[in-house]
Length: 632
Image 1 (cartoon, rainbow, N blue to C red):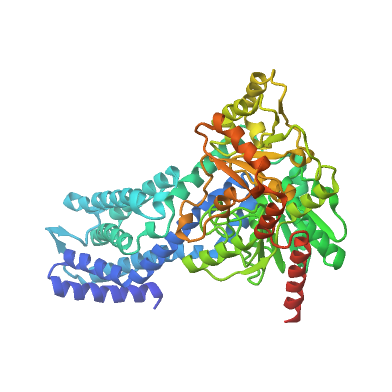
Image 2 (image 1 turned 120 degrees about the vertical axis):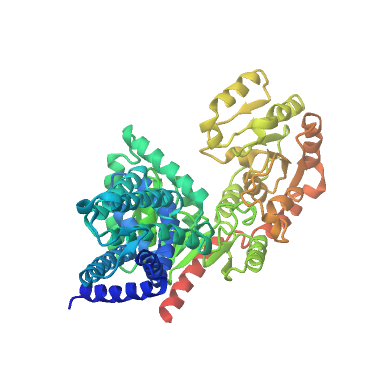
């Protein structure tokens, strides 16, 4: 006896048992269907959880599809890697389909066996042993109701089923047409009792779906806002590709393909540095050079900028790769190295994930500013790093407070410093600017480019308050501001064209202007730290609206360094009445002893670890970490 025959025999017995309980074959079919759904409940729960897991991955999958649009191989590779990371099993989606088919064939076998026995099959004056297409009459209602129940079930699932509701309109329509058509066909050509089972199954499935959504609520697990954003990104990518806009040029695609294969084939990688773009090598350079000069370790340097000058520095010990964002995500998930060093926050939270190939990789974060890690990054931005290279004691205290407050794992904290300022100090001390006293003080205005920056809010009041007061004023906008707002810069140039003591500067190839200035005027720009801690000269801060990436930064008790430092290395003033107040503030900064070089030097020691030797400290840690790894 085959499996279907055995299932059919069991179902025939179970239907008889239900008949004995209800006294009516029609109600016996309803009870039988309800009992089979209870038996199937563990599978339904598993499918619900698997569907939630699937939809939870949709934002990431949509981003992959947007990035790799047209590259089916990369989309499949990214999807496979994602499934593996999340322990998702697509075949589970087939389980209920297979079981439903076995159940249906078992019911067909069982009911035919009962018909052969001459079992009474009456329900509401309908003879459920008849085949509607052959007998006609009132029993024809069964296939019609089967189609209607399928229609109701599909419409309901398209709205409320966790997975089906996220399908495209074409898929939803096809599913609806097939289900309704199959139900009608099935109802016409099989005994009406089987059609009644189909009706009961569809309606009970609707009830079961709502119960599962109530007890295993998808909204507790799925970020629907993020899902909506990813859909917009995917649609935007499709529109760009339809209009012929390619994310990478042909030359970039060729270089990326070659570098991707070369990187993946290189066995035994020890250290990998990742740079988001052209301007980030300066944060790594000194540590990299220390490691190369002291060891024979091969450094692997990935940049996502095809025009990054670092690609021209390749050597036997310094391997460089161009990997654009469209392949970076998969590469990072397949990362096979001992140590990965980045300046990119939000590891594991957004696009860049930790490796699924190796769980023992040490991820090291090097900051690209010395501001607050708590206020200027998103909440939990550094949670998934193993090691943080801290610039100062404030970083260290903030990290420990965040770990305590949020219950995250303790990290290795290296008292590192800031190589960029070390280099600036060395360059400044070798220059002719360090001891120069200007008869006419130079005031450098260098704002940030964030929203509500100094140029947008009050630069005219600042310039009007300084012009004609015996200063040389240089306005040096942020490069990104110039790129996006050149019309505004030209407007200011024209307005102050006849003021001989005001100059607009857009050449950023040298730090000479920064070193020359006697006072820096800025808003919340990180240039204040670089200027004051390098030259030991004060900064005048304008309290424009803060750039706060973490609105919950007050949850920990540490005052962000960005706020505290303003009244240590300079003076902070409000934009209101700045035209009348700014020259007084400048005079204070130029002449008060509290802003002397000796005092500023003390602040430099407070706000920076290892002044002048941070690269050596960073290289020591990385080299020793590798030694310990191979020793154990």
